[in-house]
Image (cartoon, rainbow over all chains, first blue to last red; front, side):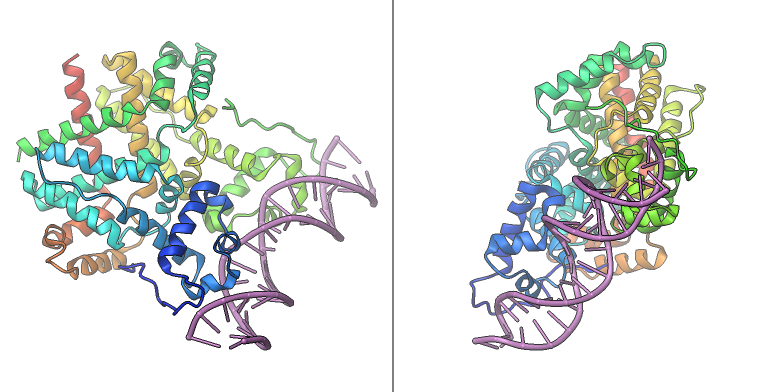
Length: 221
Length: 221
DNA sequence: ACCTGAACACCGTTCAAGT
DNA sequence: ACCTGAACACCGTTCAAGT
């Protein structure tokens, strides 16, 4: 488990190339084309550089992707320490969510990679500070942060389909058209089920339930 | 949003090929090699068949993967309707979790695909039935199921590293070695934080908090 | 030293041909 | 009709060569 995705080598570029510029261009390509459309060859084209030049800055494609994940984690704005612990957790979690929703492919990448990069650790530290300050034990704070973290990334990953209203209407119709004998509970609540699959507010609904549960556990300590 | 990943075409095989046999072989290959190691060419080799033969059964690789996702969702054992709604939800969610933990690559695939396959709908129906029976409104039941579903898949996806004890010990050491000035809360709880990243019980901790929160909401209705 | 084209071992899928 | 090899347009990465 490498603690840092830090660049192994920093050439003195003759082409004005830097890790930063490569990462920015790579992120834009990833946002535009998705994971499937992203390739070292296309990235090199976008940078106006030979394919193999990138390998002087990142040893492999995987290393570059690791750095990209950390790059985005580092882009989550720091949160202020004001308000109740619930408010602070909400702000932190929503900041993580907002930043990562801008880069869906990054969420996908996180699945396969370790989380111990500097960007991720800063977020963990922020979360642990809030929860410990609220009075959670070391163990419960660690578990609570992990739960909140996975909930947030789970929603960013599996959450609302980015499709528009048309797709939601289609989903409602599809669910309503299911055979009622086999799916009684589902067809009875077709509109609500489709809405829950597409609606942004479901994230906050679940988050509030989770925070309620954590508060109950805290009161019992 | 296609409601069913059903095969578009079923040839009368001269080689004893069926969709079922292709899917079983594909799942074994996927489990063994991961998403990166999975290819149509390798699958065809495993089946002792020309690569292009598979295209007579599944129109593209993506269609085959869709069918595979549904195949696994359909393999979740049906749950009995006994006990409190909390117990029933726990049993359902743990069944989904257990089945999908056997096939990590399937969880990864779910990220990119719609969820409206027959296998997934059966699980939604089971969940909705339990929650509606407990007394949740149509809307809250739909939201609660979606939250539980995403929590479960989020944990299956981002959850415990499959690494063994060695990796966990390494994580503890890595976290403990962080600079305490920058990561005071994290280094103070290094062992607990590492444990939360590797420990199986964190899933149930968070699930219980979520169920507590849902119960509170139910009581207020 | 920084940079790169050619080459290697792979992909998914089209298409025409084989039975 | 079912099945398939060759071919096309791609990959990531090694390696030797260019400056």
